[in-house]
Length: 398
Image 1 (spheres, rainbow, N blue to C red):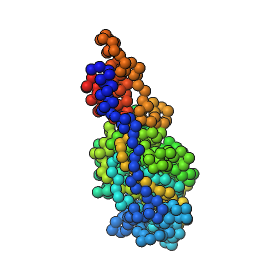
Image 2 (cartoon, rainbow, N blue to C red):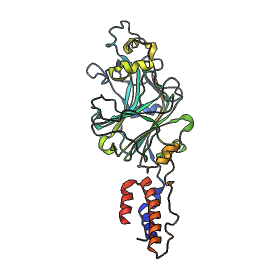
Image 3 (tube, one colour):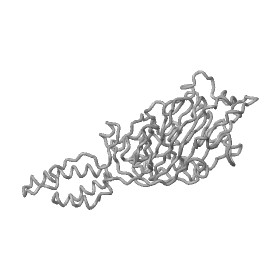
């Protein structure tokens, strides 16, 4: 096949729309008083205890309350009760402090970008906040769980993680890189080591904790995989601020889980969006080895529960939560992107095409050289834009 015919084939096959990713479309904007129209309150009681074994009672709110309201700045506040004191503090394992857990009424589906602009994240010894998603049908890890924000106690670096059934692992991919530090790689919620999930640590200090200064957390669940970012307030992408985000043009994410080792279609069902604040719990915040990492001067997590003043900083302040739909965006995070720490816009991959489409020589060697050069350039673009499958198809045409 001539190089000119190949170039025409690629042009017809791809069109211009593939080489420039289409921005995602705003689906939901949960902000101000409308936030509570999009979320419901989950209740824990004696018949429905906290699955984490925490020292809490999640309560339902019929209207504004000290635990769930919109403040004077128009931001959503979700908090732990910090005024009640247990007059009979022992045994601590029985006392549960009131808190709230809110769950979205509408689940999100694959090819959704979930964004939360957060001014304050709960912190404090014994405090376990989370912004996460969970299988809407079973409300369990069977259909996947994505943890976007989940620090405990006085941690200063956020941890991202996935929890799934057997078969999903975190892996490194030059076409799907991340800047965070990978920890456990087995996402299996029933693994022998316990339900730790596959963890990637946010590289930025003060991404949570007492000195967190606000920012935007974003999670893109697409057929390419799952990616998560943190943007400080001063570095929010302009396309996100204008409600026309294109994640393929954003910097390299803090966390990424490529579809090659964790198929987002297979391991994740429609997901509910959840915000909550737990206290202690034997599996994480209250686990002695975890608790004493940042709270070494307290003998036991549960000794803190009875004193309301310990929870003055145990609140979420949320500017907005938004969802965008569309995609998947072409893969723009190449191996060179991982080195520089920022993603190149779609279509910016280098191409050895100086002879492509211009060779008219009847010499077999000349034609072969031109075809190979163009093939290399085209396949480089195709792998970046539409993945290895389409690249292979073009190669077979050759």
